[in-house]
Amino acid sequence: MADTTVHAPVVHHTSTGLSHTKLAMWLFLGSDCLLFGGLISTYMLYRGRTNGGPSGRDVFDIPFTSISSFVLLMSSLTMVLAVTSSARGDWRSSRVWLMTTALLGATFVGGQVYEFTAFYRGGLGYTTNLFGSSFYTLTGFHGAHVTVGIIMLLSLYVGTMKGDIGPDRAETIEIIGLYWHFVDIVWIVIFTLVYLLPA
Amino acid sequence: MSTAAAETDSIPEVHTGERPHPHDIFYVKIALALAAMTGLEVSTYFANFGGFQLPVLLILMAVKFVMVVLFFMHLRFDSPIFGRLFWTGLILALLVYIAALSTFQFWSS
Image (cartoon, rainbow over all chains, first blue to last red; front, side, top):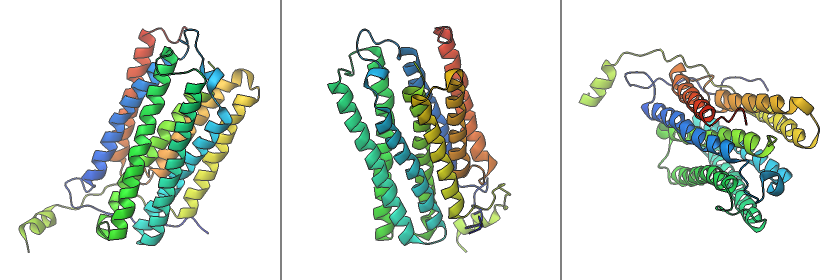
């Protein structure tokens, strides 16, 4: 199958010719880079401050986190398929992809809860050392972002089921999709810098 | 014609610089490439890449990041204004935190 066009660009009746809602979402994502930049920098500064407690090497389960990362990465694919399905008016497929994305996101969050529990049992609490505090704050904030994304995906699913979100509001799915992909790219950075990078 | 409709009709069409979006199969290919790169990243944890480990990890991370932003987030196909907003925020964040880490002498530790 060729990589042919699915839908042509839409011109919005605004002063810029662009969707202002989408513009606002990109602006929000740009500013969210600063939030996660701060949390990642703090982690990088404190990752060696174990104060006699466990370090990342002691508690991380790389195979498990790799699978979680793969799950979140694939949720980006299902999200983009939900967006393209809605853009061509295939709402049934769009709903299937939205629910799949939400389930993959829930799997990721479930994995994070399991991981946090295992780390806690392994002796790494939130206040054990600066490494623990900065690690839980960074990954916890990301997990909260994913959770918010799941809630928005489920709201979209219900909205499309009830007919509240139809062809005239298909862009809503694209905008929520932007948020979802953003949590994915943040995890791409976290997975490398926190889990894989040698201390 | 309503007042609102008259107002929107009076706004001239603006060329937004958008390009046509690709077919689903294109996104599947991107996802496969991302999955392969993730596999390579994970392999650096178990295999000995020596001095190449750090640069390989950072390059793969950057490539995956840019691929998701350009293709899944449609920056490659959407108006350049969206990209300018995002890249400005990202570059600003990078500069701010590189400066902050330098203040704490992170690079020499």
